[in-house]
Image (cartoon, helix red, strand yellow):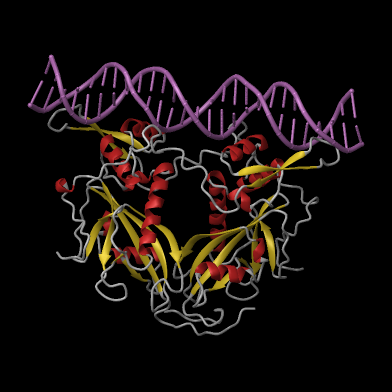
Amino acid sequence: MTVVTPTSPVGQACDHEVLAVVLQIRSGVLSALLWWRAFAPDAGRWALPGGGLRPDESLRDSIRRQLAEKVDVRELTHLEQLDSRGEPDRVPGRRVVATGYLGLVPAGADPGLPGDTAWHSSDRLPRMAFDHEDLVRAGIQRLRSKLSYTNLGFALAQPGFTMSELAGYYRSALGHEVDATNLQRILLRRGQIEPTGDTVRPGRGGGRPAAVYRFRTRVLEVTDEFAVLHPPRRSPEHRIPPPVPSLSTERVPDAGPGH
Amino acid sequence: MTVVTPTSPVGQACDHEVLAVVLQIRSGVLSALLWWRAFAPDAGRWALPGGGLRPDESLRDSIRRQLAEKVDVRELTHLEQLDSRGEPDRVPGRRVVATGYLGLVPAGADPGLPGDTAWHSSDRLPRMAFDHEDLVRAGIQRLRSKLSYTNLGFALAQPGFTMSELAGYYRSALGHEVDATNLQRILLRRGQIEPTGDTVRPGRGGGRPAAVYRFRTRVLEVTDEFAVLHPPRRSPEHRIPPPVPSLSTERVPDAGPGH
DNA sequence: CCAAAAGTGTTACCAATACACCCATGT
DNA sequence: ACATGGGTGTATTGGTAACACTTTTGG
């Protein structure tokens, strides 16, 4: 049965916790914000920020509240739900269902952190508590996927950036080479970014001054609907005719079950 | 930091429910399995199958158990998590966090249903309880997306099928025209399907006998990684060199927080 | 022999990659 | 001048949509 161990935070109605995988590109390394557990269970391991859901808050409100203890929430440029884990033994000694979130902080920001909290390179994760490492990997995977078909890059970059900076963020997040030239054209074509008109002075050694760009919106949008099984281009009204009900042997009642 | 107040109710641990959006193509119509609520709250509206999470089962086990009451679970060809909803007022009178699942049943199957349960056309949904309609739409959206870049078609089709049947399933699920000819080549190229060698006798009116195909695996696989921001083709080892730590001003400790 | 349905071959199109080349600046 | 980094132009590639055409059956 469910044993209540004194790890549960404040007066909870139910054992539901909310966890966040907070990612940021720090000096060219995709990093995750982790928190060091001083107490059992899993003392000495690193855990995701988060905690119990309060009776009067939504999941999203909850994770924002709990993140506020770790990092300045105003720095969070994106927050979306990952998935929920409910294995009975995922946390020893007590039954907790966890809902994971992915949070993103733009490059360059450097929020102050509590002493037990630190950024960890995503490809050299420390020993982590419970099933948290798995959630981190899910978060990274989600980020990588969405960079490809949405404008999620806005959440990794500061408001104004040069194309080589942006390509660097994509490189770090995706883990492979990204050509700044082609990235520029892809994002321009899709209407994700636009030049601000400003330029940036070249560093020592010279070089042409780089144009400054910004994302047109800093809210998630899908800009590349899946490349295959598109609706046909030719006849825009390729609507599927509603099938003849008389031929149907279906049982699709619209009212109550009067059978 | 963490306050210790073991107020969480023991035993019937938490108000967590699991819901399933079960979809099937029935006579060319993408349909959802719904259940008629006889009692308050929201009596007379249609709801998703599901129910409370038991203390000793995982989320996935729970939804399988609860679906077994509505539909022969052996018919379920696919089951994946959608998302969780935790707004405090999503169900009047009590606080319940819900985790939604997407379940798929292959065309042709016609499991017996309890009297209060029926299939409903997905584009003419009845008045639904709580936030369930929103979950249905999320499920449909998920299905449509994954048809494009995974082999999820296996879950909509019976084990053996002709290309025109399969194109029909895709048409119904996606809501737009799908060319059987091109679908065949796409799925063959991706290695999703293969001919069984059998053919099917043409109906009255003749026609060339159709070849029977099957999906090579009936487990979800991603067959079309996102079309853009691929790793470069040329040099397979375009690995990003690990950044020099000495130049880094980072604080990415590998051990406990000794700061 | 004709109609119907399935399958094949071919073309056109579009978007992304690769890469050579041009531009603007610091030393 | 020339090295350095940014930006533009362009050829190539690859995969899908579109569609005409061939194949195989029933009447």
